[in-house]
Image 1 (cartoon, helix red, strand yellow):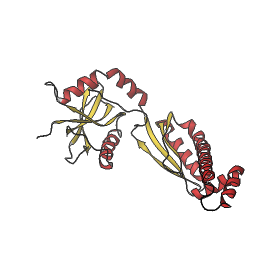
Image 2 (cartoon, one colour):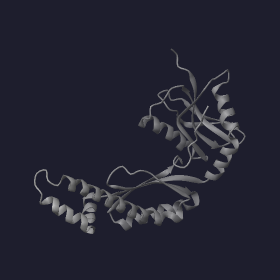
Image 3 (cartoon, one colour):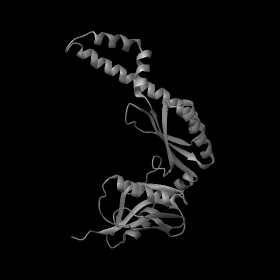
Image 4 (cartoon, rainbow, N blue to C red):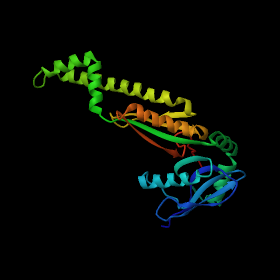
Length: 258
């Protein structure tokens, strides 16, 4: 059975011209990426079969690369991954995008685009370079943990099961407090230079901060400089992974309900 054809939507953008972009669309066909417009806003799209694209690295990177290409020249509002318009009830997918998205939600998108103008997302992850050293610091700072650890060390066989569970809980709580304290030091140094931020989940004992920042263009260099200063201050104790500018998906995600 032949697949239905439609149009994949990457982002909404502030533009009044319909044009092509030098990047390939999602999927293996390498479809052309272009915009369709209503007044001063547009939708960036590519031809696509009406399918459920898997949330794979290949597909999410393709979605991201299109947005990154568009934001070189325009303010954008990211659209949720795998948003596809299809022909329905005699109305073409392009006309549905114009009518149901650009026209019906014009005021909403126009206001959001004004709010996001000259702003970009920057990502920052902070990781302890030596997590064993961090656990040693926790041990040194907690008399309760030291006493319990010594007690467990003197037990034999299956003795001390409950004590080991309690010790694990104490260490975990102490680690979370340490993460929060050191992450807040980083955030406090940066707070003058961002408009908004999002704190995302950390993925390991090593990672103490996983944050996204919405930064105005005029503060971009100062934000960069502050990150560099933080890197110097921590003197190898904390590794900073800094990325951007990237599409502001942590702050705006357009969801389309047909």
